[in-house]
Length: 218
Length: 209
Image (tube, rainbow over all chains, first blue to last red; front, top):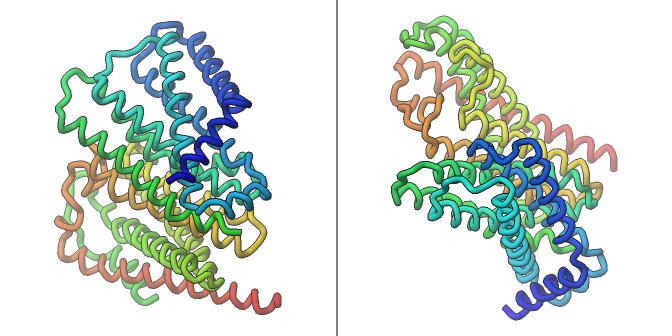
């Protein structure tokens, strides 16, 4: 437990000092939303709002999470290998990336609302789905980034590997968002959607924790 | 082989029940569904061998895993093509917005990404390990896309998913007579192809040493 906290703290400190990832991605998000706003003005169809929001968030996630493993050189990896068990390393990466995604997601949601307005969403469905979605996307992409980092640090590889894994989650999120637009939703429907998203998050997380040690050993 | 010949010939000749939209094209059931069965067994085999590789690190398991994935991709593409031909005749278009079609396409993409991953790593042991890890992810995706999501979806064109009644309940007895041997026959062909390919790879390895 202590190692996980220390590793997360190390990542956070690195990030705060360099502000490398956050600034780049924030710039990316703001400029894409700005381009969208140039096209659409403020009048936007609600389905288009959902589509654009999730696309922008997805690409921001790809950018953010891919930097997490790429920074570790081989020598540093050996150092970590001796210091901490593999499970702690992967858990700390997942927690850190989830935090990063949550912050990024909240910021992009805010910028999106400012530029494009906020449709009449049922917040009980949309907000939990959004939070769980950010965590899920970051977990899946952390795992993919771990795989891609061991095979030559090819940026295209991470996109190729990551896209199919992210698609089911994205499907569920878009469905949940579209359902959140409807006026009267049953609690059972809300729970069904949220539990599906939560299940995928859990499955990805558990698989990542189980499989990561095989990747970690040299 | 005999089973396949039987299923192909009998599939054309026997009487089929006259259903509204499908009519004669329901004969495609023998080919299309069998392709998916064969693909599923291939990917299941690859999953088993991937897990066995991760627990033992024997190179033969890695060969089996990667060859079964190639086989599975082949049968999957055949399944997609037969499905598209069938769709053109019954639904009017090669591709529709059906959850099962989209899910099948994305699963194929996942396994193609697996092939790309394999070709991008040079060192044998690392390649085997990393692709085994990704294989497990890809299989989980396959199960989610082809099994779970279509059943949860609201509306689907495929029988058995999203509110339609399942094919298996409504299958006529004459069709069953052809369908079961056909399914078994195609699965046997899949394993036979797998055997040939793994033998070829093992021979290549011996020759190279």
